[in-house]
View 1 (spheres, helix red, strand yellow):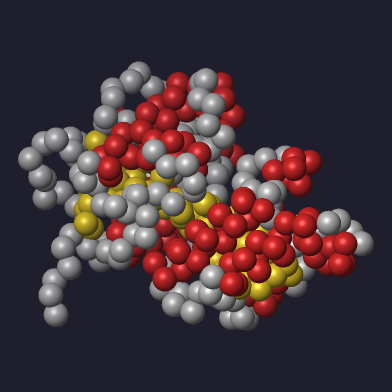
View 2: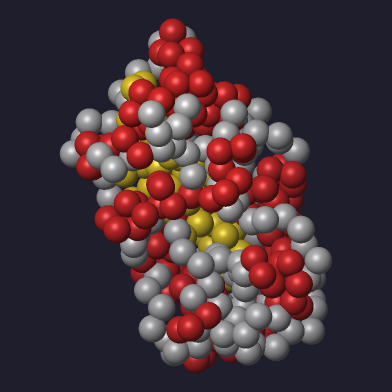
Amino acid sequence: MPVKRQLRIGITLGDINGIGPEIALKAVRRLRKLNAQFVFIGHAGILAEQARHIRLPAPPTASLDDPPTRARAYCWTPERLPLRWTPGEIDPSASAAAGNWIVAGVDACLRGQLDALVTAPICKEGFHRAGIEWPGHTEMLAELCGVSRVGMMLFGGPLRVVLATRHIAIKDVPASLTRRVIEDAIEMTAMSLPWLGARRGRIAVCGLNPHAGEGGKMGTEEEDLIRPAVERARRRGVPIVGPLPGDTVFHQAAQGDYDAVIAMYHDQGLAPLKLIAFDSGVNLTLGLPIVRTSPDHGTAFGIAGKNIANPSSMAEAIKWAEQLARRKNPWAQ
């Protein structure tokens, strides 16, 4: 059997005042047998400080432009900024640095210096205070990669969930749902499932309203928008059903009836996923020419600096990044 080449996986540290550096260090230590070299992207001094705090060795420093190092993991600081580690505090300078590290990581992937990118959590409020107007990683990554259509898939345990709309207020969801939005979510989900190893590719689509609208008695979005999008995909050969009631479809998916569920809004999809896989969920961005995953949780400022953060979700994100980087990305050139 041929030996797999060692991949180089970038891991952005996210907001340094959250748990990102801690879970990154712990996850890499846990994944000793993974055939990859890990590049922490962030402030080397603060990473070393946090490593000492949790009694782990501080990784050496190097640059991607240096001759290759044999170190299993090292820290690359693309831009040296004056930062302080203040656990649990929202600091615009920390958010600005986190944004710069994402930019550097994406650029390194696009140039072929990294095989995949795993991003630690950022603080959206901190981004706003720092003048960074992207609502989150997904939109930022799309612009950096020069693509107009992206999707947010989260998976863990038996569930794979794609969100038709993402980080918007509930009151804005109905107006944001269009047939094109739903069709895009369906198409990206169908393209992603073989990449993830789900060869049957069976997709279920949630309704927006209770009981999937009750035939129009509790809203018309199902009949006006969702059902036509589902029927069009079915005519193209996609194995898909819907709209189905959101209060039952996730149970059916967990039992193996479907390989993915498309939810109409954020909490419709993430509440069941986090119930089942709170500590092991992974976020995968669909539609990018690079591999990008992340843990399925936030900065957890409340426990930052206490050495109690669970790295399981980060470890799963890294493992999946390595697996997906070895397969054909449907959106890569």
